[in-house]
Image (cartoon, rainbow, N blue to C red; front, side, top):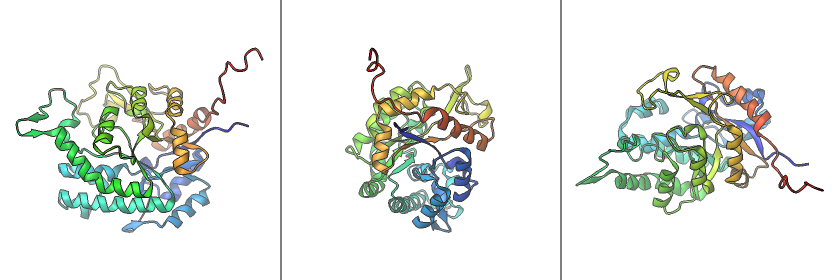
Length: 343
């Protein structure tokens, strides 16, 4: 009998108020078969939990460890040089007082230790995103950007900065066989598919540079199909998430309140995206095969990262997990529907 190639799973970063055991209990109760905890859920004291403790916690919960979400520390590492205060929520208070160079060094050391832990756990897929390595001027995407002048070239400087700052992390990940799955996302080092492919090019086709597919970040002209077809061979991870764009409201409006923004994340069933078509694209680009080979799993996770400007977070995620389980973990066709016609 044919088996589904996917299983329902959930991202842990939004559930940081829970410890690892509480998160897995919630995920299991909501219908997930696996989970992707955040790096913070694995911390213990000034270090990390042991790999045995983490494995035992997953075993007791009868859940699959589907990866480790490390967006925040990677973003801190590649953004600290800008001096932006927005990194402070993701670092200890005693680290926040350090210089930009000191914060970057702390983040690099933290991430190297996290990579070692991943190797012990046999986790080869790390969803993350690189920070603002090219600076905030380029992050605006403004078409009249003054990005180069007589004595400066922000793109070239950003390329050199990215290669240099990430080299040690990429080299260590490569040694461990770990894929660093950048979530193409506004405000990061690669905000569209072309940006990401440029990072691959300047890093000499580094195999550790992979993609975490998330269709909910395609709201400024590049469709999710265009984006993920362009980076198809690099997709090793995914999120399942939905959003809506309110007509007539400026996308770049400086509005801190989610309920008043133009782009809003929604529960999975009521956003603008056709998630069934998105899952079909993941199959088309080879995500399930690639993930299963890297992680030595029978099925690939569909990682729910449901968020809502209006609905309770736990309820939104639970509803999303159940929707993925009941609607998106389908069995793949073994052949063409035409083959049985006239038999």
